Length: 158
Image (cartoon, rainbow, N blue to C red; front, top):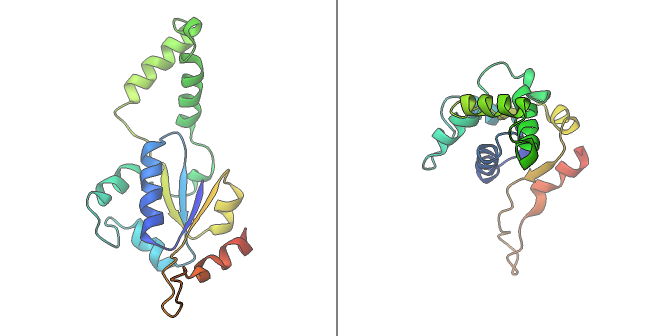
């Protein structure tokens, strides 16, 4: 899943989605290299309680070249869930092996959140794209409508 994020809410949402969905892979993309470099550093570029710990638990820290392919652990996890969820398969040898593997790796979390400026690559390798950009209220409009200028360039790229 690629997420184009120009704001803090989009990145925070991506971190929560990555944490709650360990078998999916999330990529936050932005054309602003400075912003992506800040997210790739050890500390987030702004403070929100527990956000640094959350991102550290899901963020990819090594070379970003491998994350475009589906991680091996996700395939094992999905296979385990499909087999384990049927009662007749519970004691099959391959399910027992997968169950042991799942218990062994349960404490070890695989990273599933990355930050990148490679927008086109992320779009091409995504099943779902969420666009999260700032939409502040327009100052000079009586209706307090949102300023949707931040969204105008995103669909063009898609």
